Length: 37
Length: 152
Image (cartoon, rainbow over all chains, first blue to last red; front, top):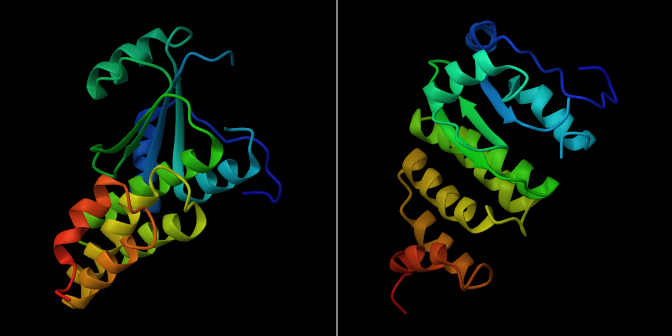
């Protein structure tokens, strides 16, 4: 990430995120929200 | 909590972040909400590489408690995967970095268990019980650890 990044780089594509998680050996953080976007 | 730079940094370094808005993305919410039984917002799930839910955070939390919960999820996930060294590192990070968070006592308990599971050193359990005499004394985790206390 860039130094001082102030927002999370969210994606909406869960399936692609799961694929990335496998490649990077990370977990997916899945946030269900009703907050204004 | 998300505008906090510490939260942003932790998430970017450790996760692939996905956000589903329950009203604006109804199709995605219907599919993923049903799959993971998400009935309330905010609900934050830690999903492993196989798509299995490993940790759930429901409701708003202050920054330190939220970071502690994210770390707790990684710790428990590592423990369940049998990576006890990694689990212990994550659990101890909670105790050291967010000692006043709700996750603190649970993390201290599981740090001791992880050390024992990883090394076979049963003394780790007694040491953990002793640590509970100085901190988190009135918690259920202290009670659980009390059976490890060496006889005096």
